Amino acid sequence: MGKIRVGFGFDVHQLKEQHPFVLGGVNLEHHSGAFGHSDADVLLHAICDALLGAANLRDIGHHFSNTDERWRGISSLVLLQHVMKLLREKGWEINNIDAMVCLEAPKINPHIPAMQANIAQAAGIDADDISIKATTNEKLGFIGREEGVVAYAVCLIEKA
Ligand SMILES: [Zn+2]
Picture (cartoon, protein in one colour):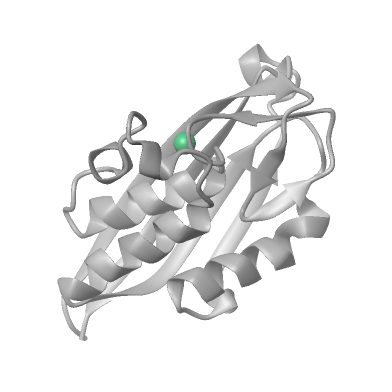
């Protein structure tokens, strides 16, 4: 086996009423949605940060500044494609990703296969190498009050 590295990512976004909610590249039907400079896809951002961290390529804000007009409203799947280009330039490939989304509503379990397919296509990897899990926050704190959404991700990358 070649050299392997682990990476960790975290992200949080505010939820706003009547705002689109993009998660894992899927448009969720909901009364509120994640607010941010890009499409505010909290899951994709946590995954990108885990990948960048594993490859020691700084963080998502370093590559995609939230004051840069190029990234306003952009699909985070495009950001993931760019992150994968940076990783492959350093000779890294993804072994697997494991992610957790923390939100009170809506239920995302029915959308997980579509999210896995979106991420697999953007990253150029197998859908089976991407695990996405979801939990509520038991109505506690800002997640429980549906004021925000949080995602965590870990990944393993390897050099052939
Ligand atoms: Zn974000």
